[in-house]
Length: 377
Image (cartoon, rainbow, N blue to C red):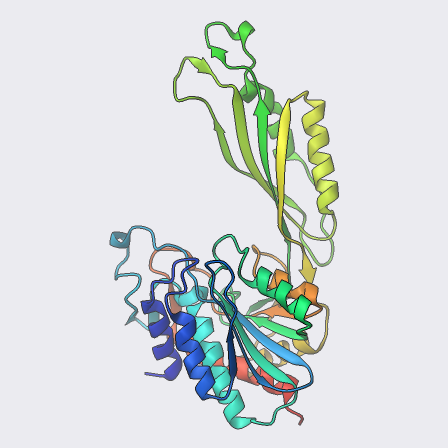
């Protein structure tokens, strides 16, 4: 069995449900230290972060990943225990196999191979890991990026190992991500008896037309880089549990995924204008968990595309779709950011898996990207 498969299995065995790292980073740090990397733990709160670097002055290439995983759900629903890696039918099964312990293992193996063959490479190559990607993402890469900004740590290029591929390895890479703007809306009414509606004010009845209008709105048309802004109501709650009580409040949680065609300020203003026009007595708490970023054509994009063409014979689709990733915290540091990883079809699902042939090709892809950027021809 190959080194990358064995390492991925070791990581899957560690029950690192966010934000618990469960020893994953210590395992990786020990390996990278033996390979000559300087490894620094950057704990913030209850979150473990690892910064491992090799090299000196010059451009900095970072491979970015996370060791935390989402909960498995009912383990009885899995064909095999989620934290006991199993290989069957050419696939490695286990929680985190695709998202993203497979990529993390591949990055580690790629870096070991790269510095063994290019001990005197230009610039620096690094691995940045967190245990807070699947959670609230407050003390992970967000906090590390703040630390880097304060300490003057530069990052020129960043490869994120998130599962980006659609049908085959490398067929899609992410060159940007949309922003995420969440609102928690509270509509105030007057509680009362359902038999005496004239003595109450039903916030459900009041809010329903406004929410319907918001759900049907076209917020923008997108642009060449990003698809149109989407709006989704994800939670709706009201009532006391009794069928004869008009509730006093309604709470709705909604989310905008937006590119650069609309600013967060514009989206907030348009939404609140609808609420006011419908005469609602409301309060909104806003949270911007990520702003959109886009990596233009440059050294990193060209290197990734060239490696995929050379090794896989594929010209990848350049996408800004999907959710968010920790790349949103690195891009504002001035870095070019590209996401490249395995198929995402099984992530967060029961029986999550990664194909062995994909996993075994990933280290070569990551190492070749580093060579194109940091090794003089």
